[in-house]
Length: 429
Image 1: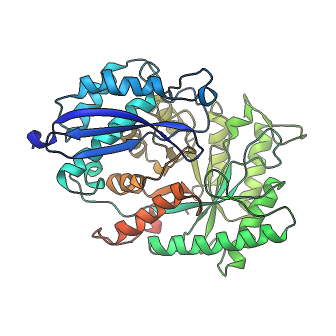
Image 2: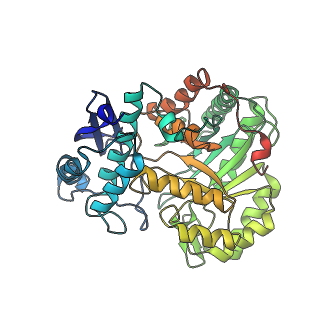
């Protein structure tokens, strides 16, 4: 009822993400006493079309403090939301968006707005004494738990890199339930750590997304290590577990030219496509994410046509905040899945619109965490509430990653479907 779910207070506070970087937490209190809190996750990269992560500049924390964003939460946003019904997420988000009509929400900051939008959902769930997936589901039945995409190798796209990939993830395509998918991925991750340790390239350490760093590895070596780890753990590559390769090619190329690794010559679009097709023939890869630059629609379409319908070509860079671009990619058959990251837009309503648009054009959605993440487990609730079939929360190390995987195990005990995963027919492989 609106009497108990009316917003009476909104406040912001500065907290820290997994990289030790300041981020915005919003806290929303309702008239009935319920409280919801949420932290805006932060990307490690600046993407032009995304909602702006408002930072202070200046000397503090290398210019990355968030006091300006907090001021907006505590003043303008708090005043605007006072008296609204937290149970009406759409009305709350419309009010937020009316406050800042700039294309990238740079006036108030996408971080200030998204933290508040998400905190309202948590407050509404607290008022109902219900899990937050019930708020995300909007009264619909819950979806199944998402198929985990567990990152095993963090390649690290640095200027002195030897590997032209952001990361490699495991997909337990043969697992029947969520717990088994994590069990298998954990066994393979342990095997990979042993292989790295024996390689003479230093101790295996976790990168910022909780996956293993493999120092000095070329792209092929990193993929081959993941395949060997699957075999070492006693599983069949391509039958029990397969690989998802996150390229993020826009970080090292544009306009059809790619600087493929330290000291290497440039590669053109055709060369990149041939490289991927060779990998698909040789390795148990079932998914490629952002394989070419954001401006390479024709190139991605050519790759998708050559790769065939059983390969997932996922796109995320520069399209979540732009439904027109998503429709253009779909019309050109330049991909078949959307990588959806909270924080790419400024409200839950906009994020849901991107997910719905992907479904409308026949694409699947992959829900992904961000580089600068925190200890909350709400991401899996979003996947369940919206019926998203895959979740990429990082690797099996670092508390902010484990929190999300563990929350899925808890939900398996309470959902009507238990820990059942979506059927294999829901995926292209």
